[in-house]
Image (cartoon, rainbow, N blue to C red):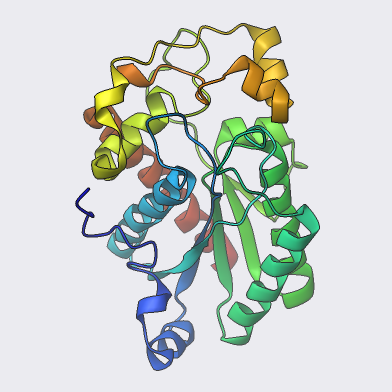
Length: 278
């Protein structure tokens, strides 16, 4: 496989800057973008780092849109030792204890705040409920211990699942997408959406020769509920590790989804900053 130009997960992040450049950006009021992914199996066709590659690409696109709006943003290197429940029964699906992840987040927030950064926007690339509750807990810890304006930027569907309190300052819910909803069976993991996004951004890592041979998983509510229990339950329901229709994926759809998500995130961030400055 030929690596893509932005294949390095540190590409475009503060890891490429000098300490002086970082200090100057903090003094000038730059905001931070931070992705939280996980190393997790993604079927026979996608790499275990999918949940790191996708939010990293998302943040690079958001940074460009923020710059067009006069907001300078830096990207924190992605966090990828997350929490796995659903895929825990598969190889290459590693997890840390939620308490450990929360404490690591709090320590990093302390460093960011100590450097003078005041706004940190956190994004998740992983759908596991416990992982996302842990991201929220870490954001709360950062706010309480460090005084940083940290917030978890959530898609509306994720906010509905997690149920944060109305007006929770540690949460910024994105505006809903204007794209029409696609009917059919659930597409929750390594299916059409994620595969399309990977085809759009990291085609070199997609086992494209396998796609046509992957039938859609037509699962009902009972099977999906069993899948969400994770571990051996998920592996028995989806023995190949995916839930959806990866063969229906295409790069054009991935580009459309990615552009829409970046636009909505940039809008939500600028609105939050506007309210904070008022």
